[in-house]
Image 1 (cartoon, helix red, strand yellow):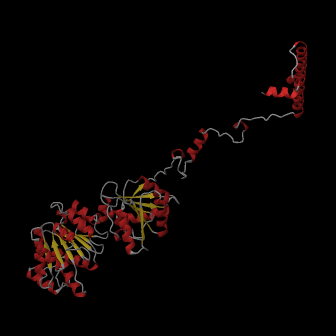
Image 2 (cartoon, one colour; image 1 turned 180 degrees about the horizontal axis):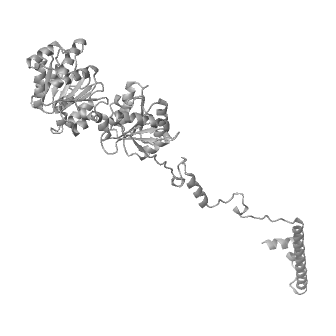
Image 3 (tube, helix red, strand yellow; image 1 turned 90 degrees about the horizontal axis):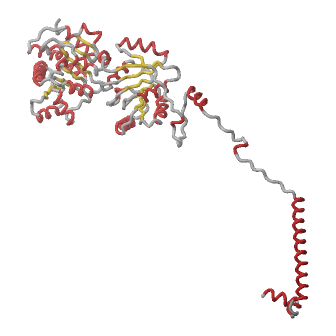
Length: 485
């Protein structure tokens, strides 16, 4: 196979002659086709063969720069500084005639000189992850508008303790950036790196592992993909019961309809968990404001409608609940990539019986392994546990309500006469009362007449035997005045 058959750019062919490379390989053709369609890939190369990946890369840069006004921006991550020097020297030698500008940044060299080189905006930036992260944090080099990210030596990242740094850079690039990973063997480090690569990543060179290598297979070992088989008209109650049992502090609930999100917002808001809703009809400024409130105010639930999880800068999510199955089945894979790895990180789908068969068939086609969950028990609050000051109504199970009715004592009727003490009003016989009054008067008159008779007899005896008469005793007026004084 010759370079003429592959239509390699003339400037690149001159550079290949300078480094004495005259024979094309099959992997050159595969990667040229891959770069043209811009599909991310995991690439296996032989030992110390930089031309297998860099040759198609330089041809793609030279050819695309001639067809468009804006030059490409490509970042190349190397596990060590010495390997970065080898890559930079090879690109300079082969791309010399094509006038491809590249800069190298490593921990070994002076930072000020590297800063001036990055400000010149070269087409290719080669460096170790640590120094590039320093420039990113200082704002000197940005990941936005990066067209391609190439990771060399992925199988040795753990050996040089560079995996977390590479992972941070790879997860920070935009979704339009194509990621290419080079490795010589497939090990646990490469598998972990694949877990957060784009969902359509292809595998080139690992022929024996082609059907079991990819982001989906790596995610199946790290994130739980589960589903509920929900009875009719019980999606909301199943969702609320699941949220009450879940211990995750940040949860995303994704639905297809905006009306569904609005209804869920009103229900979840009553739980005082903190909820924010974002849908596709909102402006970009309002979306950013609500998302910042979600993180600043430490809310728990984020409702999404008509948006993909990769469209927002989301982080720290512990669980994703799919209220409706998305049209793109790879959205489930993106939800799994969004989660921070750890215990009980899961994606939960709510499925009706009519959607279950199609969901399982499509999931198996892309390598997903969903597990069925038992429906959560609906929790009820007994009325006796509710405070007396509360005005809320709580549902009680029918069995508990019947048992309480049996044990409850019958209430006393308010119409019963024994409720109050009966008092009889006595009746008055006016005739009898009048007779009694007359008798009292008659007895008093008899008593008065008896005493007057006795008094007259005494006076008569006094007249016969008493002292002589005087004027006061004879005159009644004087006698009366005498009694008074």
